[in-house]
Amino acid sequence: MSTCIFCKIARGEARSWKVYEDESVYAFLDINPVSEYHTLVIPKAHYENIFDVPEHELLRVMAVVKKLVVLYRERLGINHVQIINSSGREAQQDVFHMHFHIVPRKAGDGQNVVWRTHPEWREKFDAMVERLK
View 1 (spheres, rainbow, N blue to C red):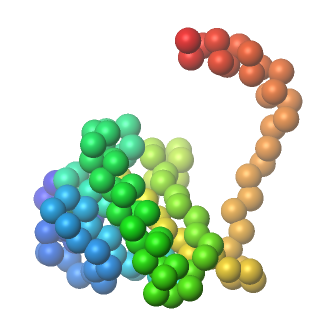
View 2 (cartoon, rainbow, N blue to C red; view 1 turned 120 degrees about the vertical axis):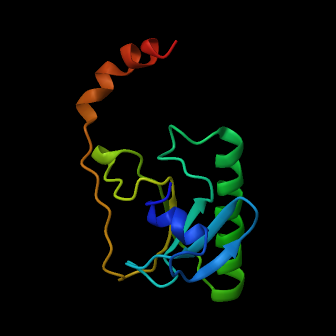
């Protein structure tokens, strides 16, 4: 897509701080980092979200996520990360080019992902699983 900022980054038309690139995947530091080495990993081809990306492309992206977290551990001593993908507006996706965040974490970093749990939904589990058959 000609107007997608991540497509422009992957094509070299917009500035980025590249940490990895191969024929189909590009990884770069997030311009709005929540921690040091907060990295975005994208397919070079445009897919809006995880629902659109072909499985083989997703596997390539995830292989790079793994490669980078191992590199960060070996070179930087980063031993705790969150891997995050948001797919769809209601899931808080804000750039509509499929991507994964690698967010290095450490105690006291001020970041706190808190999920509101719903144990009352357990009584629906049998019906929920049945719908998937």
